[in-house]
Amino acid sequence: MIHLGAAELLAAYRAGALSPVEVMRAVLDQARRREGQLHALCAVDADVALAAARASEARWRAGTAAALDGVPVTLKENIAQPGVAYRLGTAATAADAVADFEAPPAARLREAGAIAWARTTMPDYGMLSSGLSSLHAEPARNPWDTRLTPGGSSAGAAAAAAAGYGPLHLGTDIGGSIRLPAGWCGLVGLKPSHGRVPIKPGYAGRVAGPLTRTVADAALMLAVLAQPDARDPTQLPPLQPGSFAPRALALRGLRLGLLLDAGWGEAVRPEVAAAITAAARAFEQAGAVVEPLQPFTTREMADGIDRFWRMRSWLDISALAPERRARVLPYILDWVAPAAGYDGATVFRGYGQMQALREAANAACEPFDFVLSPVAPMPAYPAHLASPLHDPARPFEHIAFTLPFNMSEQPALAINAGYTSAGLQPLPIGLQIIGRRFDDAGVLALGAAWEQLRPAQRAWPA
Image (cartoon, rainbow, N blue to C red):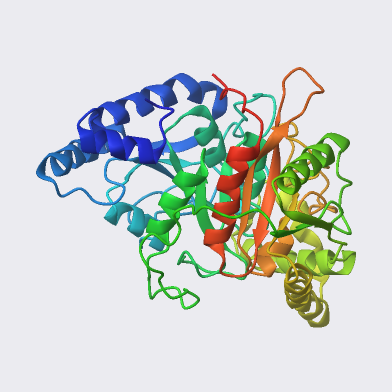
């Protein structure tokens, strides 16, 4: 039952074929079996989870169950819950640091009856694409090959999803932190349109969204997460119930852009390019019109945003007491160090590149119904590295396909396209589906269409 999706669990609860208590026990058992290898979780309270499952079971019997009642869900450790540890993946935070508020995504899931039974690991401040962290003794590992990273910064969430720790997992994304781990773990990961899922604290490009095994589950989770919360002033107006349920999408005549060169960053590996091209050809054979999309981002954009983010992080880290600052992951300290010498003009010009990238991405994508691209230019890399190059002077080389759509605020879905053939173990290759701003339902619909078109998927790692 650990491999059942949320929709399947809800149907089974409704029919009385399964109980939330049975499912919660099975998920807890799976986590106990795998955590020694995967290091996906930073907090579990089995007693509280089972008590919540018993309460859910009672609601199902009484006919008062809510939208996700009894479905297990994990929360990334930067999602605040009142009185719960809130250390942001770094040893620089106080050992007794706890949140004094409930983040909107956590509140919506709780109100829908989902059982938030565990918190998942992340790197320091969420600023890496791996699970490397000064707080956690071991980085999160990829269930497909435990020598490798699941990606980040929603590292533990992706590892948990791929390993069968229940169907629903909540991540956050500011430059690829949902989509990268989804792509490297064979999952569905949605970066919603900015404002679609209210969030606190907010930041330019920062969103929360689902990591699941199927598009249907991502849509089910999004419907709950997208409920209004006035604490986020960027929230979008609520949509009608059922708006995100994957709809039948007519592929004939659909115009798709194919982006295989981001214009900067690491070159796309041949196996990745082949898998994404094969996906585009499959859509073409189904009647879509596929046209190449030329690069629209530049090195100046990437470097400007890098400098702005370095200063943002440097301000936070430099404010720490010296003994706490010394506990930050050395890679992060090396990354932010140059910001100490930036002047105001440098930072302002860096900030301006966020808007330049936003305008370029929206303009480039406007002629198309959707755009297809790799999620990352390479498959998963060793778990002990902070990034594929492990070079704090070149930290963004692998996010050239994901970063633009945080800045442009467009919805972008990561979904498995295929697998590598080199090496000891086949590894997932992520396809990214980008839609126009606010068309979250559209990217989910095209993702569901791809689930039907793509070749048979390999079994989840045991």
